[in-house]
Amino acid sequence: HLYYLWTATWGLGWAPAILALVAVGLLAATEPKLLLVLVPAPVLYVLFMGFQARFFGRWLLPVLPILCLLAAYAVTRLVTRAARGRASAATKRPA
Image 1 (cartoon, rainbow, N blue to C red):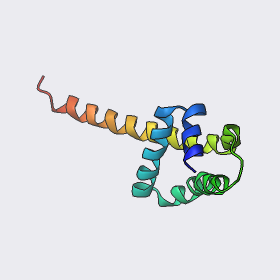
Image 2 (cartoon, rainbow, N blue to C red; image 1 turned 90 degrees about the vertical axis):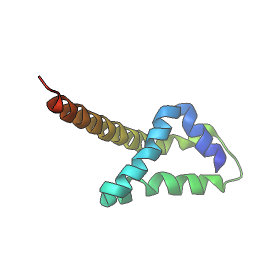
Image 3 (tube, rainbow, N blue to C red; image 1 turned 135 degrees about the horizontal axis):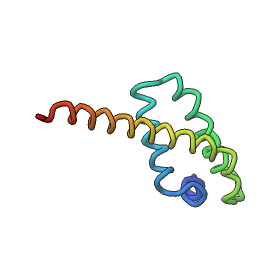
């Protein structure tokens, strides 16, 4: 199991992999229906593949698009949150 989690950082990269994990938390807090659509597939796939006798990094490829979607969701939510904070700070400044 750890092997496939590690190989996710090869093809996807550390930042998107971490952002995909952040997205799971964001989805759990705000959009549980979307969480039920996007998260079970990669989790179940890694669990299934982890029990196999042979390991090969490219076998993680089927779930990389879902991980990319999760990372993109996290980026858009974080950027939107930062933009709102910047806009509210700009309106509070004296002229």
